[in-house]
Image (cartoon, rainbow, N blue to C red):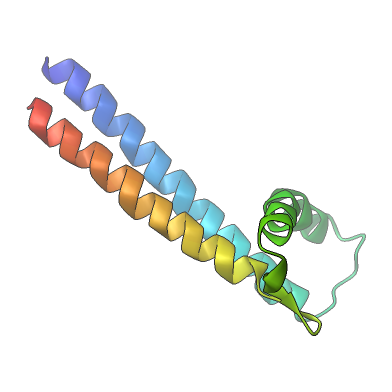
Length: 100
């Protein structure tokens, strides 16, 4: 039983880390967008490819996030990621604690 608990704990830890990494990527993409970098830069392309699908979905679901040229979709995405992290990751950790 302890092997199952350790495997589940490792999976939850990896998911938590991936969510933190994606939140950092979203934050960096937001900061980079303020400076109007070279669109052909490979780092800028990577950031855009990683974040733009999520931003597009948020703009589609919540049309009010793009107001007067200000795009608030990164903020909404960061809030949704954090809520997901709290709700899902903490629930999984509590489930693992109950299994023990």
